[in-house]
Length: 153
Image 1 (cartoon, helix red, strand yellow):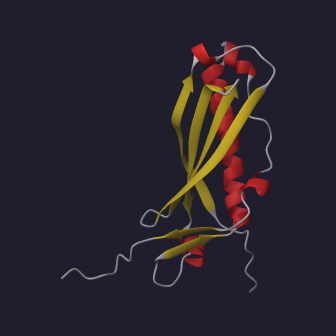
Image 2: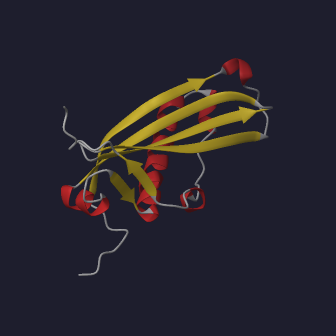
Image 3: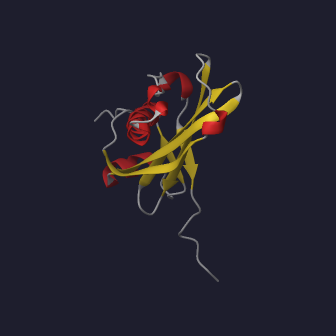
């Protein structure tokens, strides 16, 4: 049977707001808003979890006036996890297409959290635009785990 790189069974099990802040003293109503974005990834071998975290920083005149970081925690089904991890359980390799998909879900989730946090405030006019995660994530994600099978002496 042919294995497709972009078929992994998973479930979104948890959403976290890692940080959120508005800095009113840095805010001024100008059109030249700069948005910085970044991704962070984590994996838990024992629980078969992959965490994708997005951070967005809104700046005006080189001053940060709003920050949001959110995470989506995905449980990978055992049969998919077994296809992604090497035989001794020390290296997990997730194809970039899957990483991009999980990142897209996380960006959309972060967008919703931002709206909920800023609703009925002047900051609600700022949002996370659509972004092409394929341009930002160009390679597979590889996680290395300590070998749990080592014997203690």
